[in-house]
Image 1 (cartoon, rainbow, N blue to C red):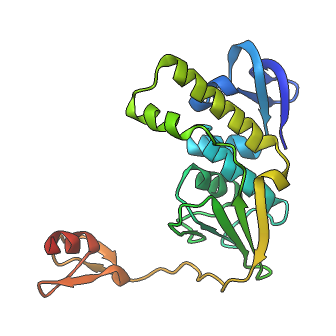
Image 2 (cartoon, helix red, strand yellow):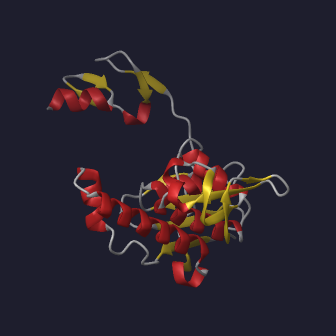
Image 3 (cartoon, rainbow, N blue to C red):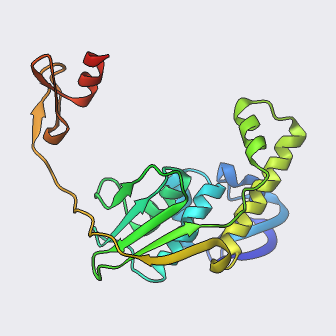
Length: 232
């Protein structure tokens, strides 16, 4: 899947391979003049990184899951695959980019369970896989990440956090599946296909909205946004 090498970051004109330095992954910089441990990215991972905007442990987690799925099912052109994501973190973007499961097509369903777990349902054979990311690669980062977002990290601690992230990404992308993923077949009802519902006009703000999302307040048919304002 990935190959670790010692080389200058940049583009190899003979192979059109791109290398991403762990030191610069969060800025998506491809070029760097110094030598360091780098990772050769395949095309799918590059596309996921472009879609997401940066490379981080969360994106790498989602990509490992998506790559496993692609070994068993082709990319969803329309709604052939349905992804039920149990989180709304960075990892979901990798599945959208790699598997073609998106909110817009209705084949990405969000369950707010806070788990790095994904159920992939194939409409072609009626089977589903639940894939849980079990790798303990983020241990030791919680306090540093909290302080990073609070702006209280010292330069030394920031460097330590960067190194921990680098190590996590490397392990996520290169460790064997059995170390990172827990996979099992599950039986679930076939997810409902995407539907287009009639639109109606909100009698409060005048904007159109999906009919099934309507509410009533003060004798008016209103959208969800106006309903929440009117009952507060």
